[in-house]
Image 1 (cartoon, one colour):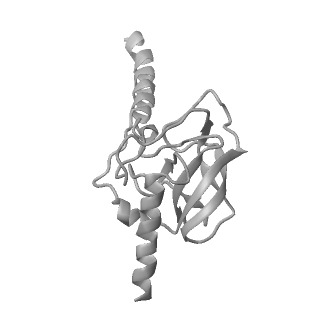
Image 2: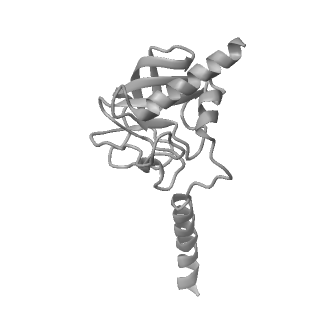
Length: 178
């Protein structure tokens, strides 16, 4: 009996740990690429520059929201509030994570398909198209449209995804003038 009494707390602890780590993204629908452009407070093309706050323990990565923050220099404001820079939760990496779907994208890049709803890694020096929404705390986030292409890495300034988003933003601007 004593043996079972000691194992029960360990079993409960193990179940709790594995249940927390085993959570995956579950959504009832993905925001359309057109709605991304409409609903974002700001859409910017930006370069991942450096950590604003590095990870507390670089050996531990989460597929959820990291404790580290990445600073981006904004190159172009496509729609919404003009920004000079933006800081987002994430990790800096030295590998590419381009979307493997055809443009215009309707689904998150591969880095966001590994258990969470969001891609959270950014190649240092690479450009990204960021669909930003302001949180209640007044900070910007890309974590507002689960499994959507809210922070895609760009191939160039003439990336097909970027061109498509620019055109959609232009349509919205023209529609609002009429």
